Length: 130
Image 1 (tube, rainbow, N blue to C red):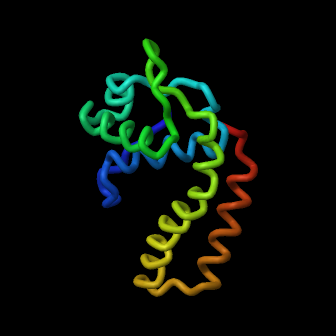
Image 2: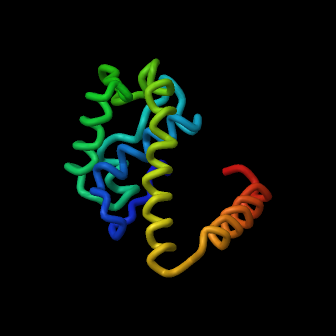
């Protein structure tokens, strides 16, 4: 499954779908030429309205990330990985800013955050790849 939707994070659902597809392309989970689930399949998987998925897919097409393959649906564009990789750090930075604001608001020190990051990083490195 490509997308996991969080209705409480303040990011519109169509944007979450778009970002997660771009992440999947950037990290190699979706490869050039691979088809993405149809609008209906994605809507069912993510438990969202088909119009929401259609909007995300339109945005991805206009960004040149997905291309329409006549008769078969949408697939990852040939130059999509190059377009998606630079945005990964920007998207992670946005998420990190949100978490750091929460830490600051709750009086967590920089040292505590760094220790937590190092600890979590070590734990995640021990997990088997997805």
